[in-house]
Amino acid sequence: MGFVEWFSLILKHAVMARIFTTSFEFNHQRYDAIVTVITNNQQLSFNVKLLDADLHQLFPDGEITYTGTDGFETLEAINNTLAQSLVRRVRAAINEHLITSQ
Amino acid sequence: MSNYFLYAEDDRDDIDILQEMMRKHQYPKRLISVSNGYLLLQYLQQIKRGDAYPCLIILEAKLPRLNGMETLQLLKTDDLYRLIPVIVFSTRLCTADKLLCEELGAEIVEKPTTYSTWQNVLSQFYTYSDD
Image (cartoon, rainbow over all chains, first blue to last red):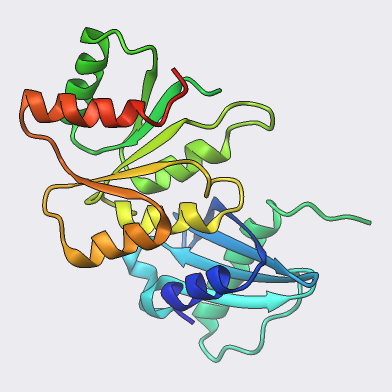
């Protein structure tokens, strides 16, 4: 799902949405990302926009979207191991921003 | 009420002009500038709970890294930022950008190039403040 579709989804449904910036290290380089988190019926959905064009070969348009009830669920298998590695880095950076409740 | 405008602009001259205009007309607002949309989001993110958000965000449409229209979409996605008024500066007004701004409740204006057009735009900014 691209950002435009993602954005329409937010506008059409009464859900809570927050955005934040984060950065992470991948292949010895520092990268920036913008994360949109949507809360809908206690389910968290994440859309990650990778700003640096050299990562866009791993993810078309530099976008990663995933959903989870707590944001920490294992992603569905991705065949490209480099992409998997990138996702792990991105998710670790995102998780630092999340407030977890007991 | 917040006492500042937040301006995303990569052209230092334009920032200086706006600052100078505000000083000259003794407008009681501060101007805080950042050079792209990503830095604008970072700036908003570091504002602590209880501190004021800007009374107006001004976005140059063409910015490096994250342009004005992309930034606008993100701002209007966020539950905390979506109520902050936004004006987009564009050197060339295109229909698609106009429609998007209209849909998102933002204004799009042609970027001023003369003293009098800067004055007009500046008075427009002040309709967003409580002064």
